[in-house]
Length: 122
Image (cartoon, rainbow, N blue to C red; front, side):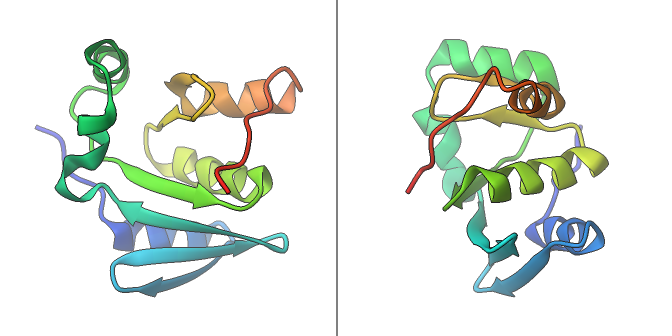
C-alpha cells in the first residue's frame, strides 16, 4: 500500500526548492521566474475519470498506486520548476496535454534537449 502525498508536503517541497508558494483553501499558488501556476489535489479522483483505460494502464504500470495533483500554469518554465521539485522527492509521472505520459525526469530531459515543447494550458 502506498502513502498518499499531501498538498502540504508538496508546498513544503516547493519551498525547500526555493519556489515561492502561497497555500489557501487547499490549493497552492506558485510564483516562479515572474510566472504563476496553481496546484490542486486530485479531489474526487477527477483525473482517473478523464483517462482512457490504456492511459491509466501506462501510468499504473510506471508508478503503481498513485495520487495526483493538477497543475495549471501560465508559462512552461513554472511548470518545469514544479515538476523538477516534485521529482527531487517522489517518483513522478507527468501527463501533459500534448500526449506525453511518462516519468517526470524523462519529460524534463526531453524539454532540456529541445525536442519537446508542450503548449501552455492558459
